[in-house]
Image (cartoon, rainbow, N blue to C red; front, side, top):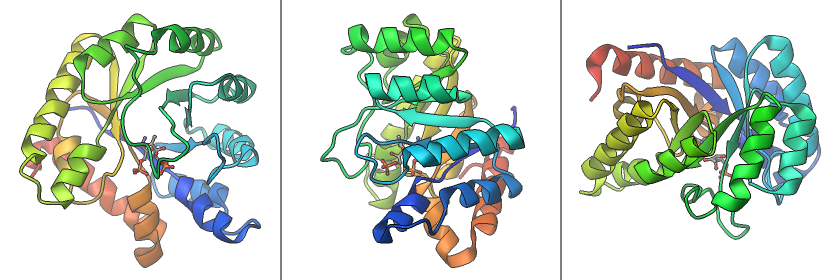
Amino acid sequence: MSKLRLGVNIDHVATIRNARGGSYPDPVRAAELAIAAGADGITAHLREDRRHISDADIEALAAITRKRGRPLNFEMAVTQEMESIALAHLPHAACLVPERREERTTEGGLDVVGGHSHIAPVVSKLVAAGVRVSCFIDADPAQAAAAKAMGAQVVEFHTGAYCDAVRERSPDAPALLEGLRAAAAEAGRLGLEVHAGHGIDYETVKPIAAIPEVMELNIGHFLIGEAIFVGLAPAIHRMRALMDEARVGKAA
Ligand SMILES: CC(=O)[C@@H](O)[C@H](O)COP(=O)(O)O
Ligand SMILES: NCC(=O)COP(=O)(O)O
């Protein structure tokens, strides 16, 4: 199996910074440390309400990822404002995510099927500008097919429901994992590159990493939380080791 890439999401360094205002801790410094610790890319979500990452962070992250030769995965809602920001910075990738102001976190995948008329033009413009477009979707083959039909090159499957089920010891966990496996297989058959992310921790990473079509995991909240206790580099090293173990067939 090919080596799985690890994208480190640094949003929640900005959450801590914003709790006090000012500039500390700096998500750009976290991105530099993550790259030094072996992150294959950096992910950042510029929410419409700017609750964590700011416009200035995106500008600085675009510059340092370019300098360090690592991809920036820019997570964005499908709006005119975010489209303009993506086109101004031309990140390696743009991941289109659903957003609701009142949500605590991204609760589900983008409805690519239902939102075709407003999503397709944004996908076209970003692809034409050389940005790799990813759609953040639930484990639903119909959503993957719609993303492919509108020209997206990548789908990222929302792993939050599976990860929550594992943490809650829910009997639904095996079926949710099976749904991710089946959707990944179908997306792979369609010729899409498959990513996965949301809510992944040390306990849930191996079954997800063992899905052969998955090429990249994007992990943020848990790694930033763990960094408080052990440091960012050791947390990334341990996650990387679990991913590599899963990839050689030792998944739990
Ligand atoms: C789209 C996604 O899963 C991540 O961006 C995650 O949402 C981190 O940001 P929030 O915790 O603000 O949702
Ligand atoms: N796209 C998912 C992501 O970037 C990280 O999600 P989380 O690990 O912060 O839940």
